[in-house]
Image (cartoon, rainbow, N blue to C red; front, side, top):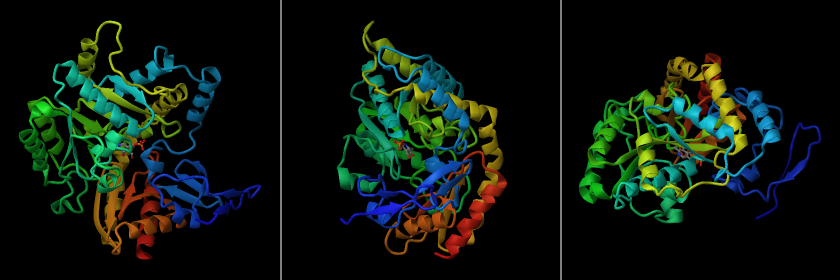
Length: 447
Ligand SMILES: Cc1ncc(COP(=O)(O)O)c(C=O)c1O
């Protein structure tokens, strides 16, 4: 490969940076380095590129900057924390803010999901949730329950547990089958529900795939059913009406734990703290990350029901480590400080309520694109939406071109293949939504 470098434009010193050494994640590196798009600043709803051009952020970074960019309160809280206590081991030692943040999260979680385990990312939260499920069944003398049931088109991160759960063929093509004993229910994207805002009328019976796996593998072998309440990365697949409640019922009947992966849907995206509350279904275990710290620090967490937690605690000998798991940076002081400052913002600015209030306008604006060129479906719920565009013959190519053109036209969003995902920061005003849809329409017309 040839050498690639880039001169930052419009900067005080106009430095030239080498592009060779950084191996970028989930990026066609050669394509990017031939034509880089570099961001140098962010505030509120906007990024600025190195030319000083303003780009509206329609995906909250990667669904994480819910309170908008550049929040000073969070930066100052992190600075204060690092100046006072930079680090203490989370094993056998602790600092007050980790307890405080766990309590604050437990105030937001539904039901008795009141025991919080800290991790550093969404991927780690998924693998941790899988281990909690295994530990729970083992604690109750049911160590045969090792299988996991997930779903086609699911995305559960990049660690081996999450890769095995994910319903993405490229994972298996590149990395093999990963963790054994995972079966996938059918996804819920049905042609009967095309162009539906909110829950589709068709498809609740797809939850019965779980019963079929019970009949095929035996409930005594199944640990948990893991789903995103709204499948996010694959393109905002909103559950059909009644689907999640049906999964809950089947899990209860067969002693299977229900795990909701709320890494994207957590912290107000659906207008409630968590999507489970929007759909009135309480899981046994819930993962979260991203907006937990407004992306100012890497952090994730797993909320576990008291029942599941207590079973694991109760099975261990007095003085023994009850759950053989943890990361060096579990509950890092800087991340906890960022999390607390973020939850203060969500509460003080009423951002979850604000999301609920803006959602009808956002959804209506998104669905106004139904007659835009190339659009083949639109889906959405709360402040999350997606549209598919027709393939140009090479799957994902047109989507890739679209996200580049959108950026050049002043709009940042995430695409997955030929699907564009929208999740504006929850501080958005109606006018921001209108600007986003305007740029989308113009760009689609010129595609
Ligand atoms: C539902 C879900 N789970 C897990 C992850 C992985 O999170 P991370 O990239 O922080 O590891 C993501 C990331 O988008 C996600 O959407």
